[in-house]
Length: 131
Image (tube, rainbow, N blue to C red):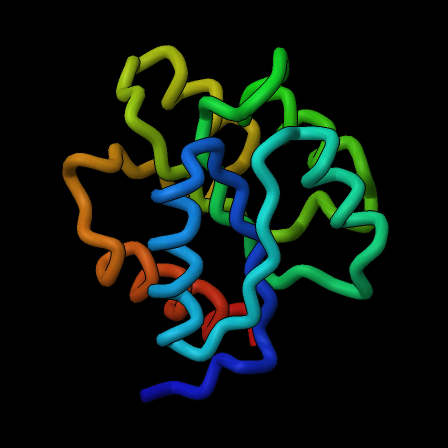
């Protein structure tokens, strides 16, 4: 298995049980994981951390702001704008997917259509290509 312990994932997910399950799965793949449930919390973590290698983002988050709001703020920041973002959400509306893709995400996943293992495999491939 590819060593990933030096790779940091910012996991942004509003549902606590799902957040815990995804975090556990990522850690089993030797990622370091930091978590947030709100846009402001995620942006604060980005400011505080030395680096983040990849972002796992849900569309629906706690509070008024959603994943698109987070992504717009991310892309406006010259330090963060190139961090690969994988959106994993329950919503699959074509207009929402299109909006995320236009903002430059790596890939959009509908939660019910993908296993965690498949998404993690894609993340590893993307990180390997960026080395």
